Image (cartoon, rainbow, N blue to C red; front, side, top):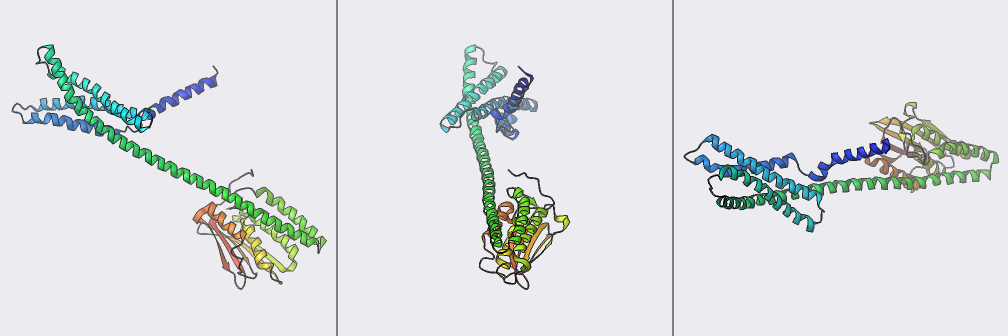
Length: 388
């Protein structure tokens, strides 16, 4: 046997040795043992209290008897308790099998304990019975009386133990169901986010390629220049399209590439400004989200106007939130300016990723146009995630 095999066997044995108390005695606590001990003490006091009122009362003898009765009763009840706990943990959970076996465990455990108890007490207190027959008869009577009493206490303890164990198991099952539900919800959110990203990416790419095609029909040189810029844009965009995270610096560069392409198409009709502080360039942001706002500003705000307009991109941190703002001087609110596919998907992505901690707000710009603001938790740097 190799050293690895020996190590594996030793590990299995060690883990089994450490876990056997949990498998056999799960649910048995020191609090439960203390309750059993308290019941035994009450029973011992009940059997001893009469001696405190006798004329030949002696404190030492009464306390000695109390201690003996408590010790022997505790032995009996602990045997019964252990039998109940082990039976509950080791037999199948089928009620038709578990409950009869629990009653049998109480009967056997209390009987064995009572035999020990009667043997001890008969040796201490039945010396006056001269012949063996009288002693055996007396011991039998004592056994029947004590066994009935301790079997009743054992059944009570078993009922209490089963009640609390089932409540603990129900609570554990409820917690597990909640964790499973939360895990399932997270998986659904991740799947929904992937679907939304898949909708956003072709939406942008097809629009851009359509612009290139239209430009080739009117100005081949400009179309070639635009195609070169598109290739540079895709070289930046494609590696991060399938990632779950990005940085503000990368997203700002992506938006700038897109605006350069659109300015080739629109000429003097489009002006833009990007104000992203260097200190925020490594902040974590969702990929393609800033670009969606810029694309929306061009498509719904600037392009419809003959004179065009401007787009301003800015980023600030306030109240531990990163606020990305895209303001345009376009035509303002229309039927589609706040409810397009891009903005709807952006809102859904924010909810899926951040819940109530992030939002997208659309406001009127002054003197004309629309301002889109994304607020999300500020993280100084984005984690590194490789494309799948």
